[in-house]
Image (cartoon, rainbow, N blue to C red):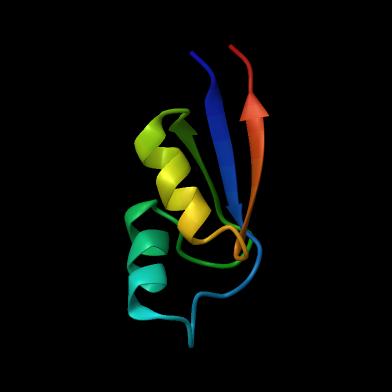
Length: 61
């Protein structure tokens, strides 16, 4: 199963509350922080909501 490396590239400050919540729930704290999450529908949906704030790389196992 593939993994996704999600990196916060822009600040979530002064964004909609829903977008700030998604950033926090993904485990992203500061700009340039990264997390590795499984590639599933829930993760893809969250990334879609904040796509303008993050960059995503696919990690093959």
